[in-house]
Image (cartoon, rainbow, N blue to C red; front, side, top):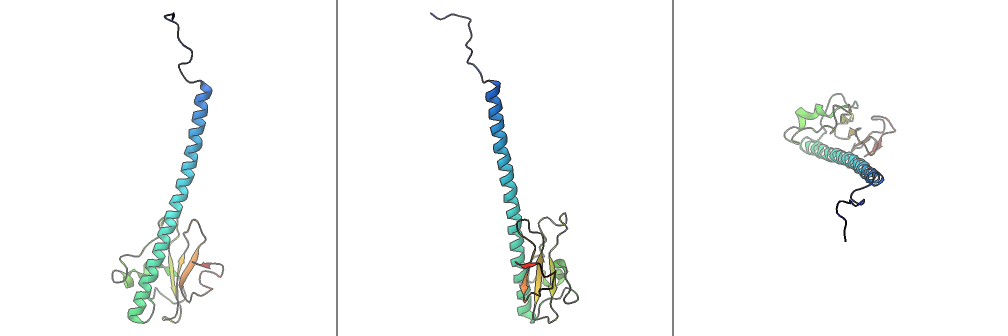
Length: 152
């Protein structure tokens, strides 16, 4: 025979059980946030790699048409890549790409042409988040942006 009016003591969760669940959820949330930030960094670096390929292609197409690399200013001096806008846009590239975090990062892409216009050029990519700044181009001079800057 069951007694009416007596409540069972096993109706809810204890405070310890709730605290354990909250801690587990907090740990999982922290792991997700860390993984998400890493994914964002790799995605921005992939954008930078795509920008570099597009810029190199447009510069090489320009050279194929004219026989020399485009000038940004005085040879052997680095300039912002945007100085090539008048030369390359829209014939060789739709628009000159910028670092995904520029201007907040202050790290714009740079360009330099060697003293022999048909011989060398380089693009300096300094905004990478998962690897060091690097330079890429054709016959890249070691001295451009310092000898410690590695090739991309």
